Length: 178
Image (cartoon, rainbow, N blue to C red; front, side):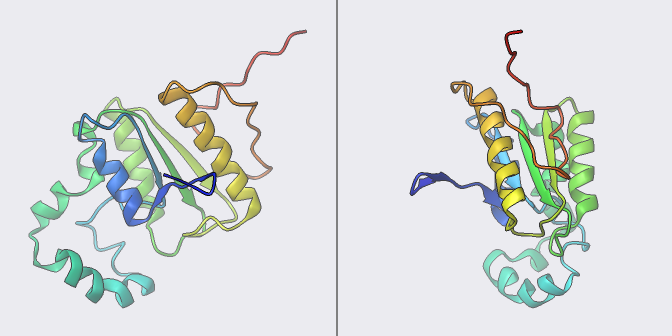
């Protein structure tokens, strides 16, 4: 989605939906920022934020009424073998809402299943990407990822700010003439 000339990505529940969309062959790639990856785990739902939101989300989505098997079937972590297309997964190192271990497990399991997944960890951000360094890193990683996977023209050389992890695999750097 483009709004006022700036790209938007799907985060949190939208990131969850982006990853799950990779089980549908109509989607070529996914970008997920701080996504929920395992609805069957209570780790994400036990944090202070989710305790406040659980009643509202349960009313809207009905998670507490679903059996664990159905929650697993609806979870990106448990659907890695069904996914097609690459994913860029971005997470803030200080996110109090989404379990980092779950995202790391998703990345590990997706790669083990032969899927292409890049991970970008933003060291100064939480659930929202608020730092200027994080926003710059996200823009560069997003630009490079979409350029590669949507056959877009090559952008200028991306450079990540100090302290930000390189997406894996690394962003290809254009060759310079010597």
